[in-house]
Length: 115
Image (cartoon, rainbow, N blue to C red; front, side, top):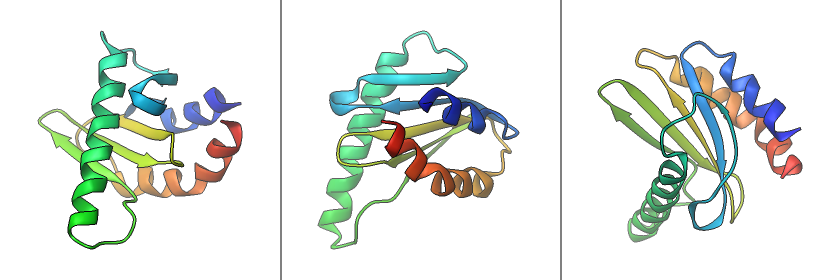
């Protein structure tokens, strides 16, 4: 069920991969393009989310809802699903980020239920 939901993101133009990252950065499931070291990607997403949450707390802001990393040839969006899981989406440049964000919000409950 979870893999099927992740495959929905691959139908969005420009999305090349989706994964659910568990506690301590472990990859629980993936869809789409395989990266040479997906476990390292998971660890970095996990650490980036922890650092971003800490920064949000230091700024006296509400709960962190998403991190967004734009690099030369693509974008990574990551959103916490619950206290132990993160959904990460990797897309090409010039992808409609608003559409990805909409689908993340729309499918969030289904993903957490499937965990």
